[in-house]
Image 1 (cartoon, rainbow, N blue to C red):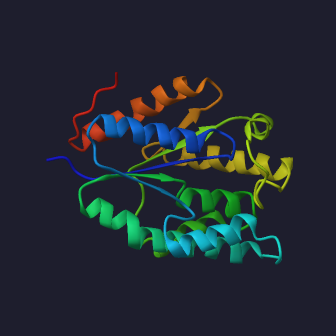
Image 2: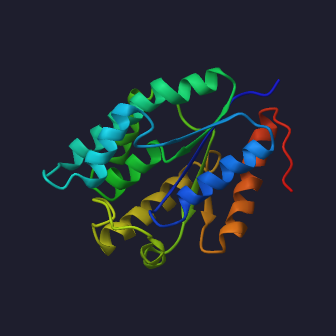
Length: 214
């Protein structure tokens, strides 16, 4: 019997991550795989309010530790309301970002100890982690050119911050290759999507799902 699978897609803003989430979910549905899609932060009523504050709340100064903990709170609610129930139903969950983003944005790029962020994150999620995280990578200048909306609070922090973000993602992906896959997101959308399918198909097959790449 097929077992539930938890997937997350992450990377620098502007890599096409959200588009690849949508394409992945659409493909899984064509494969008759029951799938729940969600976004972190967000995905619940409380999470949406926290997302608005975190990404667009410019009225108040926010310490990096406060920012990190608000992301954790949104994620804890998402796990409780959405992710764990979907996995309990035997579904595949696709999350647009998860804990790795906190580790990179507030840890590597923001100055917090990444090990501390991992530890708090594991507490907030009850130890739940994705079976596979796909990390999309493009140079920061390409990411900025691809951005199709006004910059949010995190996107507005400048080139040096984004260089640290990219370095953080690359470092973390290299530390756990059994869980993280670094994907070059500079090619065309369809080319990247095929690479996503390849990695996801392998994990799904390992969990007993019958999917076809083509």
